[in-house]
Length: 74
Figure 1 (cartoon, rainbow, N blue to C red):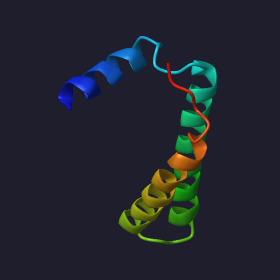
Figure 2 (figure 1 turned 90 degrees about the horizontal axis):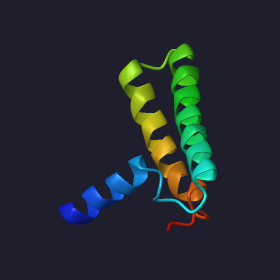
Figure 3 (figure 1 turned 180 degrees about the vertical axis):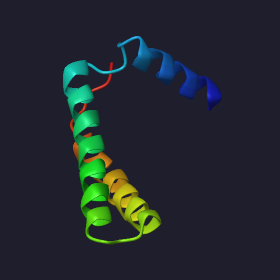
């Protein structure tokens, strides 16, 4: 298992993991912006920071499978 994770990390950082790296990186940024925007909106609405972080992280993490459903790997 560690070998597979290490191999995937190596391919990711060398830019050879995704068939369309530009699309994958755009979706990564979109997911991060969604999570950060949700966190800032909740925090500015007066929600406690720990709760805003937990909710934003849960929703942002849940959005990842939908964002990456059409990504092709090499």
